[in-house]
Length: 399
Image (cartoon, rainbow, N blue to C red):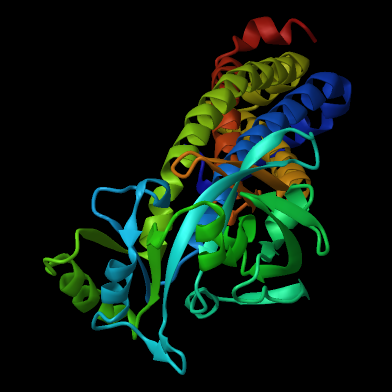
């Protein structure tokens, strides 16, 4: 039995012959490499949609903030709270306080139709009526253009995502809402969160425009600390005057991403799987061509005492190397082609558009490389065993 050093030298020798034969079969090699690259690019590209959607909602809350909805409501659209209830919530233990009082914003959430810039078709855009504390409850909120709206006036400010995707939301534009026209006076960013997909106004002005009386749909709260959440929640859920559910904002928004991300994953993995089957056959064809082109060399080496294991390992090594090359190309295409690409889609929980950027994460790139490696292993296995078990005598007759 050959020693470890001898075995590795045998593998290196057989692999060298394989690499030297690539120019003679460059067509099949290129087809296999770019086929695998296509599989990886599609998988990573599709899943980057779900990752970007999930990221924008994950960035929409923090552990020291909470949202209060009516009990049984799974989104703001189906929730409802009265003014007296929102006051009780703001006075609950655990709520942080600033110079202006409790950091709690009772908010109204309605849907308006605006045309997309890219297609001109009307889509649902969230319009949120807020109270002054809203600007302190959210993290990383700052104005990048214009100014905040004036409280008590029919003015709106717009998230950078909404301004980018939808028409009529530039500073100075007039937006028709309810019975009035509302001037756009500012554009704000919010650290990539869902708020950037929204249009904001004074809650009282919005209530008047939609005849909502003194009703709200949610209360956004900044807590004294993440540890204050349980005390805050217990106080509200045990209060006989209230019938509410309380969640941390980050957990609430994570739930909001479930439907869309599940759908994308259910589509992305099967599509990539079907393409992977084709890529495996491409790899099989390439490696069978490699074995056929080296029949005499492999037989000669076997006659000189090279072991079957060295032949199998070298063929597998070549197959995996070509697959990894394709995987790297596909990952690069996905990263430079999709990462940061801005789009919008419907959030099925709120039935409103959410703007987000595709996110090609490190985890997705690893998934793509692992898939490429698997294709290489499956595509090289049968040709490797065929090469190792070639009848030496018949193969040498081809000399």
